Image 1 (cartoon, protein in one colour):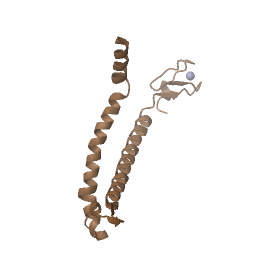
Image 2 (image 1 turned 135 degrees about the horizontal axis):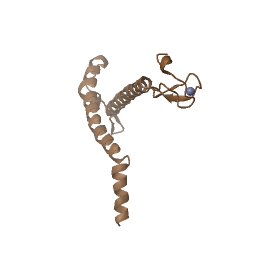
Image 3 (image 1 turned 135 degrees about the vertical axis):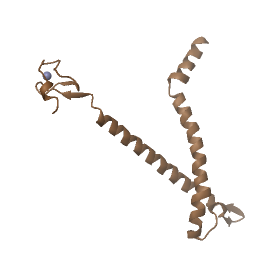
Image 4 (image 1 turned 30 degrees about the vertical axis):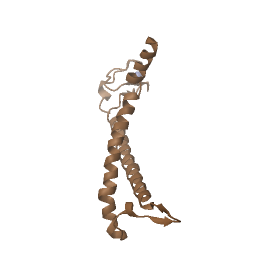
Length: 137
Ligand SMILES: [Zn+2]
């Protein structure tokens, strides 16, 4: 039983469980924001152009059954906004990552033996050439 709890602890603490939980909580909060954005801001803004007051109120009768296609349109708009927002966020994160990686190269190549050495090195550890005078290049 103790082993079981230890395994669970490992899973909960060391695994991605916490990251996942944070993602789910933020996702839920983000979902509320997007649905509010759609139902309270975007739909009312689109309505005058389309000549309808509210997508959510759109429906028609099909042999006695009510088809709420307005709610489906709302869900579609919400999905597009979420997908777009996530795409923009990920694009931004990737750009920052690229910048970080480009800004701090950890190594350079020795100009004498062409082996990879520390960026700050003034003497090559492989061929013992003095690199101090070629540091600026
Ligand atoms: Zn070298």
